Length: 258
Image (cartoon, rainbow, N blue to C red; front, side):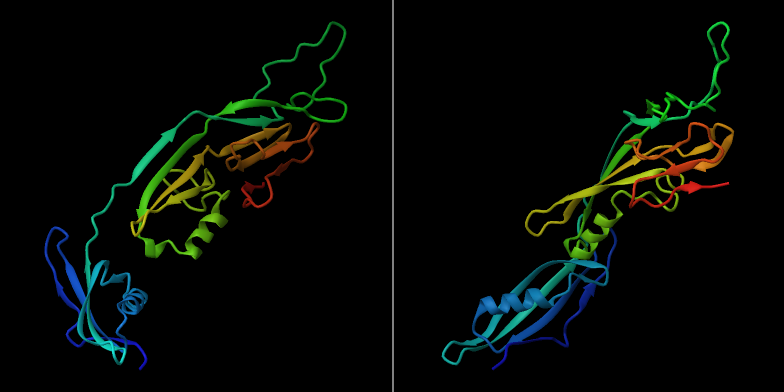
């Protein structure tokens, strides 16, 4: 006799109340086995993680009739649902700053040639050599922050984890935590779980202000979204008649050209 599980007509009793006191019960009957381990396996694979917005809490099994000689049995199953006590999220931040490699000065204060010589005009380029523009590392404002949230185990699927993986290294496409588009870089997430508890997932971010009216010699770039904290996005040309702004492969384009 095959083992089956069916929801009872008397199932889905529920109560509603104030102060998160709502609850519900789903009732089933399992037939076709005298093995309680098989009953548990079938029940765990059948009952939903949520019902009417309530989270699964516990289930109980009651053997109504078990005949070991014929390996058959009837089992009552009751699954309880309720409001899970929420765990408070935590937030951390630091403003330690980051380093950016620039090749164009923010402002030229003056030129001081040797007597009898004219100062060359490199269009604001820093550290010009015969072959390259070496530039300089500067400290830039970087706001690092993280958020830890508790998420139901049923929601943290392989697809969810894969989405977090693919979003790592990307910038925001809409306003986020009071930052403008392109100012927040997602640095990834880490999660832990014990037993049947919720997942504890920490999301890590770095924010840096977008650049407006970036001057590269005679060229003005109307806007350039935040550079990654490692300074790997930059604009450069020793004698610019046009400018090139580049970011590492895999990051969304963040340059508005004029």
